[in-house]
Image (cartoon, rainbow over all chains, first blue to last red; front, side):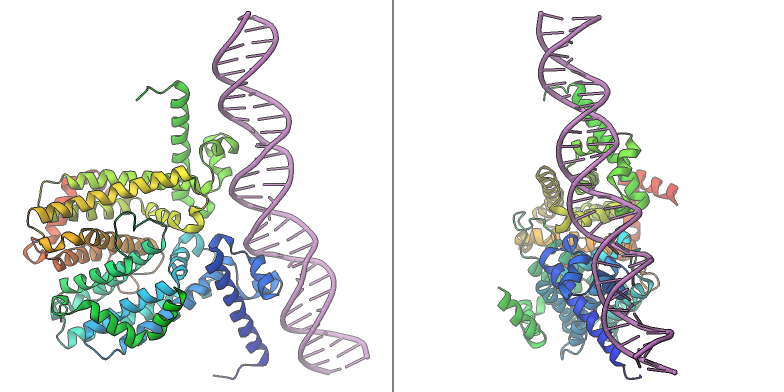
Length: 244
Length: 244
DNA sequence: GACATTTTTTGACGCTTCGTCATATTATTG
DNA sequence: CAATAATATGACGAAGCGTCAAAAAATGTC
């Protein structure tokens, strides 16, 4: 790993500056109101310079998504390290995901936006590759825990061939729920409880269905949620409370 | 219900024409390549006339989504009528949703696109109301089956207060899975099975978790899938086979 | 059928935003 | 300090949205 030249460092710093500005604009005003001119104005560089860093508006937003996935990887890795049963560690991933979503609701939506083919075709090859490798990495953390659960007998051996199906189950469940949460559907008016609560319950029921021990019927799940979130995500919780 | 005047009929016919053209363009070239000029050219009316029907491009796409949800309501109602256990009927909803998605993969993505706030703010009030009432109607079909399951004892009474949570569980699970299926993530390369298969398994496991009888461990789920889909969605299956 | 009035259609136009590229500016080298 | 290379700039072309004054068509009246 050669040390970076001053040039390269400046380049990286500016890239960070642009990304921060874009993220801030995105959070404040949404995707449609994020314009390259506004980004340029905010960071006090010309548009051409922005385009030296990012191939298109979509490429810039995709880069923000990579950041988001990196943040989630960080969270997933913390969950992986949680000193508890495999099931608790797997649950910790979901809790982390939910809390991150509460802190940065726009990020979830952006990821889905970028996964839209129409957007994707304007993203640079390089960035798509980066995104793909991050996605691979993050699913790998989840599947590792499932594997360990099988190895230690907390999950039946017969599911060895289903590991990825189980991972996909948690993924789709959370992804769908958090996207619905972020959309403008008036869930509350329609009689639905807070999404995070429903999601937590359903995630537990789902793991019960796979007979992943210990079952939620033998657990105080409310207490478990508290325990995990305060152990791993104290910082996020604090930020959340500030925001309210 | 007064009979429609010739004018009104012409108006409705043209609206249908525009919607068909827009849907076709959308399916062929995606959201970004759908332009109002192109729609106007295709239907051989001027752009101004299109704008007499739809307040904006987003409003037009939202109208397409309402059509999609109407189609799904149709499918859900067929599932509701299925002569089987409550669990089979609830599963039938999921199967219908999956098959519809296979036939019209773009529709799933469009619904999510329209749920994006940035898009929503350009949709007419009227259309948003239409969408909301359709969404209410479709969730209602699902929750009716859950209620019947409790009433007939196939689902424990203790879940009476959780009906909407159970509905939300199925909804989010399917919504997330189908969106991931439609996105360009190379799931297969990443070692994931076909999404429809994983989804079917996970949906069953989820209901097992709620102890909704009869459990999938007492059922040949592959056969059940076949049975339901050929009984209710023969037409869709036929169309699917043609497409391949 | 001729004229007046209302309704509908049209497409040129203004505006916004993306992304480019010739030119200007700054940095580096001999 | 001049020559050259690297970088930054913002005016500009292209594309698309949505509008609106004017044109065309439909309807009503005598």
